[in-house]
Image (cartoon, rainbow, N blue to C red; front, side):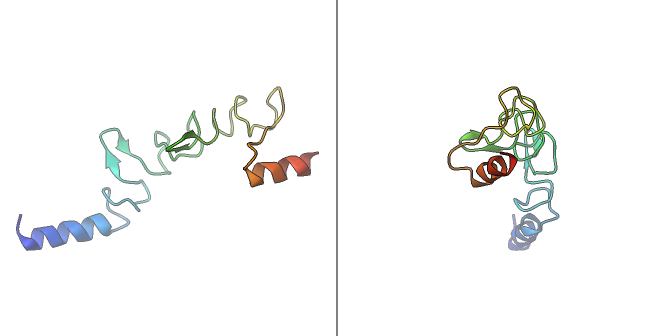
Length: 96
């Protein structure tokens, strides 16, 4: 690959509109497709079945709209909060 091609590829991958840019709205492409937050199959998509993922696993098991989710307001045991989740604790204090 010549220097011009390398430079062009660098510009393309750095552009937020590039499918291979980590800052692309649809996220970088992978063998499973784009992994950006706007794609329902993405681990970052807020309403995917298992909720958004982190290296430590799903943030909201079941997704926030699922009755199995700790954030779902009508789950059988009521909403629950991890000890270090300030937003959920504030929500619980507001609800009670």
